[in-house]
Image (tube, rainbow, N blue to C red; front, top):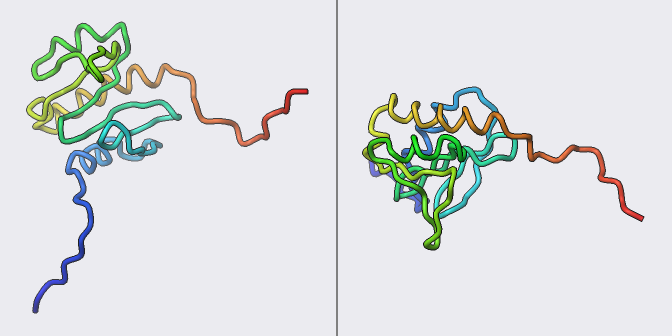
Length: 126
């Protein structure tokens, strides 16, 4: 019996790994930066693409995070994005490695105020 093949975009295995690592935590996903970004309370947490992982660590943790193996400061359009690091695929080879980066991102993003708008209607300015 032949299998039917439908053309769909392949799911990035890192997306599945991040979903599993986030477990029951409330998050959303958004297509950004040529990949998939995971958001908590409207704040970007971590993103994945073919180039590796984009991890939001905050300005205070930036230097330490960028100095870790397989990590470097994130650059977009030739500009450094302070507070974000790029992690090469080798830096997330094990679940423990990935969890370490996710924990760093959570430690920072959980300190940020929510960007999710209230369901109440905004007051109109006169």
